[in-house]
Length: 170
Image (cartoon, rainbow, N blue to C red; front, side, top):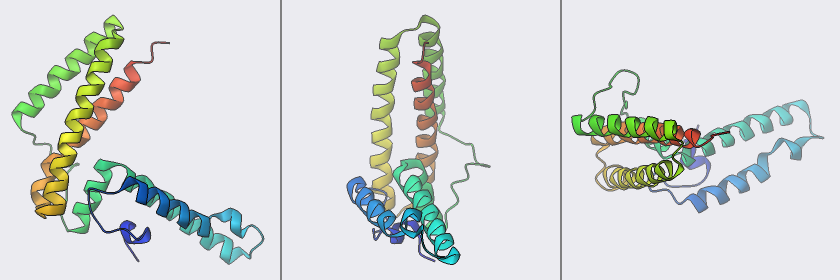
């Protein structure tokens, strides 16, 4: 069985060309989508459904920087320890506490400008961590060293989702 990158004909790397992934996904779906096999036999329809499902899952995983990093580390035998290792640098955790307090205050005050500023700051921090991951994974092949950055990126992703949800003042 091929890995997700091979499924789309892409080299395994963190710094993935999103356009190439999108094109490869569309091309693969055009070949295996169940609608193409509506008149086929049961076995062909089932196989089509399985391939289409696999393509969708692989695409979803590779589009997400956190999941893509985790997957690459797993391909190289490194467990990110998301379930068991919660150690984070103290300065990062302190910053997370500050951001969560600022989020709560902005929600309480319904401060859209503060939420937008938080979104921009989180996006910038996320880009910096993604650049670090590209360097560690793709260039230095420091897979074990990349685990901390993956966990930090996961924290930022969750916080960004909370900030997005906080803006729904309906």
